[in-house]
Image 1 (cartoon, rainbow, N blue to C red):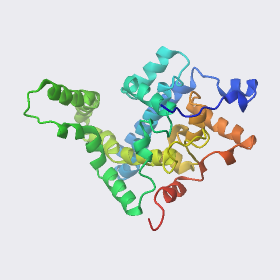
Image 2 (cartoon, one colour):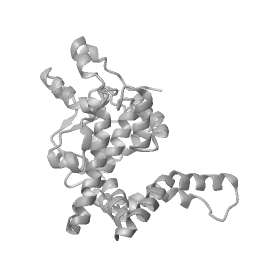
Image 3 (tube, one colour):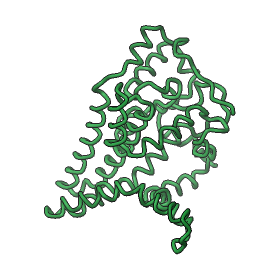
Image 4 (tube, rainbow, N blue to C red):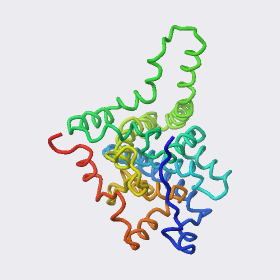
Length: 308
């Protein structure tokens, strides 16, 4: 099996530069998790007080739901906190409960990035696509079709009337994997119903996760690896950095997830060090060798070119 080429950071940075860049904070990771939940809460309060802001709240909350997944991803790299126990607690219990399943899968993605054995290769392989195809995907995302296919599509693979243990176990596994979300919905609805806010969980958690989250997850995936050649040998070109403006960082690419080339080059760097890594690479004149795009609009034009 052909593994992706690696970069030794000490061939780029001095020992002191790398020590500063690779330093792990005991407080930044927890503060980022707190920030993510605080933004979600603030957006929810905004929509309750001013209902006309609900569309904006859906976008903000959906973006921060992606943010929770990004911070869990940092925990998968053991980069959210220097203490492994605290790192895993933050990632699994305050970000995303799928951490234990996600970690080995994702580390295989790094091991074989853009190579034939990359488990995420299917996400980038179809690109470039036509603009009509991209529009259809966006419509499916924003109408909840993508959400239901990803979350509950496995149920359609089985005969619900069958008593075969393997099928029953598989159906139960699908239901069990959603129990935390369902339990959270029940608790929130019960707690808020006496205040007339029985609708809050559906509108301010379920709706963003079923609409805006699938869209921004797709845009993130496109930005990271779309239109990068399979079996790309250069470790500086196996992932892409998409420079994001303030709106894109707020709604599409929170917590520096857009610096994906730097992340693949130095995969154990905490997310809050990626901007610094980008600046240092620029100062060393290395950005020209890397895959970098000016923004998500440019990235979409590459992934779905005019006339395609």
